[in-house]
Length: 507
Image (cartoon, rainbow, N blue to C red; front, side):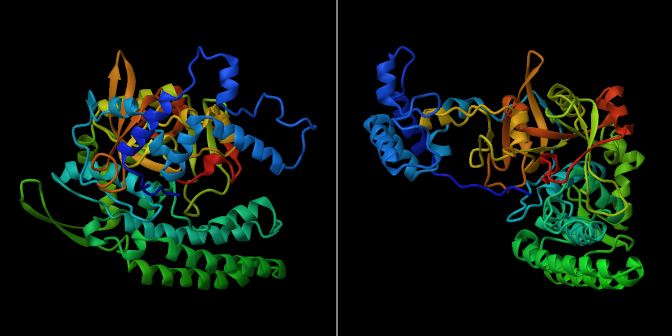
């Protein structure tokens, strides 16, 4: 799933209320009686009533809790502040916001423009990938502004996912309909989200086109109605296929025509809602002006246009990097490092590659990213963007929001524990274009988002290195910038995770 923009109250209101809360905060030298009077504790304290622990909630006990809670002036102030405002705004830390500046000492020379906008869709992975791809195209054709068509890949991804889903339904026809696997497949047959290997599949089979030749339709920018219709249709189709499989001896001959009819109906929906796309083998004509205003025109197929990213000239323009050779590093501390991870039944195009990750520590990921940035290469990465972040200011920092100040609670899950409990996963893909390094250590990172210029600093975000450690899970890197030991992991048999594993989340 891609992330959408969040709207919060003005920072001035939040900062003022937070300062008043701090003024009432308990100090370390406060004695025990003061603490008991000021705060209501639950964990580790005796029950407020004399009866043994009850499995149900007592209304009278909650009244005692509330009375004790409201005796503290800090909690009364917190009630006024937190009940009328976004807690993230009220509890935002001014010092953190000031420290997370858009200043970096390692930055790629050419970041690509303009800032893109996925609008009300979950296409962040396609935007992040095409924002990486376009840098090479812009260098090759000497462009000032350029976008590749995200909608073109979106169209073919939906059709391919529909086919992939129906094939999975056929393959699991003997499984219990109410079982976890089939229910997971039914959950989101053609969701907007995806992964790097999935966009690589799309580019391999369908190529790329400039956005000017296949711009966003209304339903590309607002995908929920289309997704809902296709999902409903595919769920109906799935039940029909399961029934036919159990009644047929020769599945492929008897069911092939039925499945083709189902896909044709999905094709109809997509074509009417997104518009007929260019065909991968048909030439298109692209007229453009370079950064100096000079007119040029080329005639080429989408497949050939994409293949040029691996051409000698494009590789040279990308500092020796062939973007078709990039692969995913992930940080999943639940699993041992130095192994290849994959997710069962996760993909989009039948017969092409599934999702593969090389699991490494964060130091390996960051070292590779810094090396790529030094070589003027942008980086696709996946993270849990909603945690300790502010879309209005564009700041992602573990010190941004002080929940302990407002609620007297501490959130202490480790990265591994957040994955184990499904508290966190990759929810959004973006692009790294710069890093600030002090004494050899990264401090903050510059992020190109796809939420338009209204989010962050005209579309740009800043991510603290602490936040990267906790909430970044993936970076797509050039093999040149990792050790041979890491590269060799790609040749090993993968540890296949179940479809419902958090590493199966689609950005």
